[in-house]
Image (cartoon, rainbow, N blue to C red; front, side):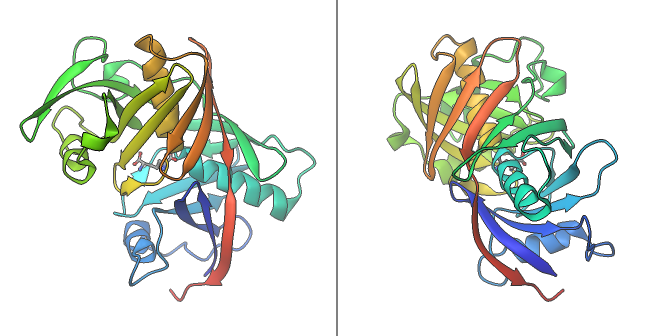
Length: 274
Ligand SMILES: N[C@@H](CCC[C@H](N)C(=O)O)C(=O)O
């Protein structure tokens, strides 16, 4: 199987093009995803990302987390596959439509390996996120491992619990992250973002991803952070989200799509023996 290793701010993926040369038709994707993503016995990645033919869009993207679960959407991966598609297939346009489990998402490939993505509108209804609360899912208390936090739940096609804290230094991500990810309030589990506000236009974020653990960046997570921060009145329309792997630039106006801009990098090409 031919693959490309790509990343968006260190959130790294094994990208496989199944559009013209399908090689994975008979494979169990959960098992393959786990094996390929293993950092010692496999290629090593946060996720396995497939490009597939689509009747509704330029192509379809599937994302398998490193634990083998399938995610609805991935912000960093969609920038990577958009750059790959434009370089490989040389379409006449640089604005694409990509079918995902979260609907059609629209990336635009800019200069200097940057990609701007219309991430669609955030989902804020509890049943659709999903989060098991009756009220608006804003500043909801949650107790894990003897510590109390307040989260705001947002779906960007995939679920996020955004938690504003005074300082990221105190957060034990490896302990608190999985405890919130698997908390019974989240029937499909959740991604978790801890946020420290630097000012209304700049935040620092640590991410614990559903199905992948601590990652260096998360595009849907950065988008959810800005949506939650706007709802809570902390942030302005255009925000720099500083993640361990670098910055994403997010724009959001109430009632509109979220826009995310960030890099997409190619690391190497290779062959994997199935
Ligand atoms: N890293 C991604 C999100 C990948 C999927 C996530 N782990 C989930 O299960 O929802 C991003 O950049 O958005």
